[in-house]
Length: 478
Image 1 (cartoon, rainbow, N blue to C red):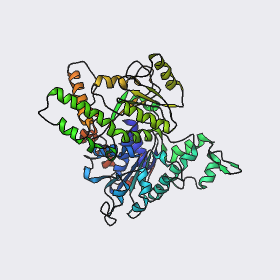
Image 2 (tube, one colour):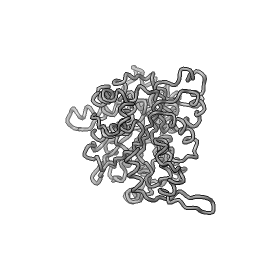
Image 3 (cartoon, rainbow, N blue to C red):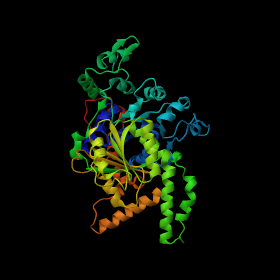
C-alpha cells in the first residue's frame, strides 16, 4: 500500500533507525521487515517480540522474505526456552547466532548474559516496543546494550505513549541516544511536567506535547492512524496467528490425531472423533491462548475474544480477573434481557477493554463496534457462524478497518477444522452463495510471488544501504 511504502522510504532515509508507531492493523510487521531487508548485508537479524507471536513472525518472514532473500525455515531460530538457549550446542560463540533469531522479551532478559558472548546483531527489530517503557525493568536493561551496539534499530508499536512521555523516553534513547542531550531529567522537566515532592521527583505528568510530537516526527518517529489511510485499507482483514508450540501440549492428544487419520473410519465415526479432538484441543491450547491475550492487554485497547468451549471461556475469564481488567462476558447463561445492557457497557465505557463472547451464543444480534480487533481463541466448523461473529465489530457504525485474528495450534484439531472451514467456504463461493474467502490468511501457504512487487525494489534501490543513509535529502522511489 502507498502509505506502507512511505513508511519504508522514511525508515531507509533515517538510516534504519526508526520508531514506527502506526496504528494497529496498518502493517508494521511488513514495513519493519522491508527496512531490515534493505540492510541484509549487515545481518544477523534479531527480532524481539511478545512470546505469543514468535512463531507468527517466523511465518511472516518466510512469506515476505523467503523468495526475495532466499530465506528458509532453517535460517530462522525461534528460541523457545532459556534452557535450550543456554546449552552449549544451541549457539556457538565462535560462529555467532543464526541468520535470524526470534526471541521473546522474557527470554531476552533471562538470556542476556549468553547473548553478550556473541558479536552484535547488525539489525534489531523490537516488536511492541512499548514493552520497553521502564528503564528499571529487566527486559529494558537487557535490551539497551544490544540496541546501542546494533547499526539499525527498528521499533514497532501501535501505542507509543504520547500521553505518557516518561514511558516513551527509553524508546527514544534506543533509536537515537543523543536526541535529548540533557538526559532524562531535562526531558522530564520539559515534557513530563516533572515535580519535586518529599519522596523525590514525579515524572508521571505531561507537558509541551505538541512540541514533543513535532520533534519526534522530524527525527525518529512515523505515526499514521487508520483514519489517515482508511481509503487505502480493506474493510476487514484476516490473519492467522500460530500459537507458541512450546505451550501446546499436543503429545497428550496425539492418539486422537491417529484416529482421525485412520482411513477405515466411517464418516459418522470420523465426525465423532473430530468433536472429541476439538474439545481436547481446547484444553491443550489454554496456556498459549492465555499468553496471547495477556500480551494483547499490554496495548490497552478494546478487543473482542470469541471461544466455543466453556473451559476456554472460563480460563480467559480468570485471566482477566487476575489482571483486574474490566470486561463483559456473553455466553449461553446470559439472560436475553441483559445482553443489550452488557453490550452498551462495552460500547460506552472506555475502561471496559474486553468482550469475552461465546461463538454460538453471542455470534449474532449484538453490536460491538467500539472494538476494531476480533480474536478467535478457538475455531468452529461452520464458516457462516465465524463470519457472523466477525461482524459483531464489522457492521454499520464501524468507522475503522476491522482486524480479525484466528489463533491456531499446529498439530491439533485446528489443522483439520481450518481446512474444513476453507473447503466449505469455497463450495459456497462456487455456488454463488458467498463472497468471503479464508484462503489469503493461511500464512503457511503464502507464495513468494506476493512479495515480488515490494521487496525486489527495496533490494535494487537500497543494495548499498550505508550510502542511502548518508543523505536524508534524497527521496528514493520504491
